[in-house]
Amino acid sequence: MHAWLLPEYIEDVLPPEAWKIEQIRRRLLDLFHSNGYEFVIPPLLEYLPSLLTGTGSDMDLKTFKLVDQLTGQMMGLRADITPQAARIDAHLLNRPGVVRLSYTGSVVHSLPNGVTQNREPLQIGAELFGHSGIESDGEIQRLMLKSLQSLGIEHIQLDLGHVGIIGSLMNAAGLRNEQETELFGALQSKDAAGIKALTRDCPSEVCQALRALPELYGGVEILEKARGVLPNLGGIGAALDQLATLGKLAEGLVSDVCYDLAELRGYHYHSGVVFSAYSRERSHAVALGGRYDEVGKVFGRSRPATGFSMDLRVLAALAKLEPGKGAILAPAAVDAKLEEKIEFLRTAGEVVVVQLPGSSMEEGGFRRRLEQRNGEWQVIDL
Image (tube, rainbow, N blue to C red; front, top):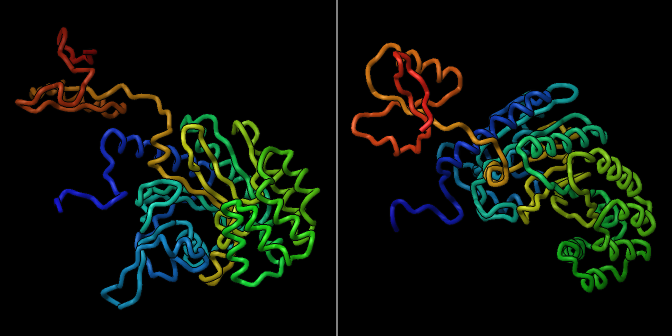
């Protein structure tokens, strides 16, 4: 094997993409900060229970595991920063009331997932702890959509779902664990025949509702259709009301709002509203979020929580940032006025590169140059 080869689905980020990613990171962190979200930097490596408890089997499969040579305990490379934010809120900050946190950093997946084929996403996101109302779901949702808007990403479709609807129907179905797992798979694949077979012994209204779920996808009219098809048990009516409210809050920030009442993403992890943002330029979601009220329980403090995350690599492929002016090439001559001019330009935010002896000015693709004219150093377009 060549020493320079990287593992499958792992890649370097080269200029100018790396700088674009950094610009996006800075812009989003500033946006989060302006909305009161405090920045945290969790470690890449933690003991396994801290990373996995309450996150479901999907996260277990994604997590690289290794043995700590100091303690002999199992450790993991984080596959998601959200549980770490919950740990910080519950165990380290331990503040009363609402806590807003933001973060960014690499996460590592043992297998590529459906959101990105890269196994090292550059995750960025925001989490809100300590409030269980629809208002906090709305705040997080709008912050996610404003983040995409700030990057010039257009034609956004927002998909809304609520895992409480499926949870209520599953509880009322009276299925054994293995049957529930099979039904979960059938619903995920929208296997109508499989759903029909697995629900034949359920109460009639629950049977009818479960069979109808895969068809309950579309615009706001789906919510009214759902009220006529789904039984009002276990808070299903309240869940539909929440979805209607969040759909209205998204007006003006998205091109379309769709409701997917068979959305099963994070069924064993999320506890309420889930949402995804899509761009016409990409088949997979560009941002994912939702409510997850039980994750902090393992850390001794079960708190209401809602949040979202995005991959900076994905955002960089879609973002439409204003192009910069490009770097300025300066000669290597020793001149006090030249040094003064270079420092002035750099302080003003310009990039100035001093040409080394023997190098070609074309090497960096420069479009401007510092030249001395009439005794003054001036920036000249090439």
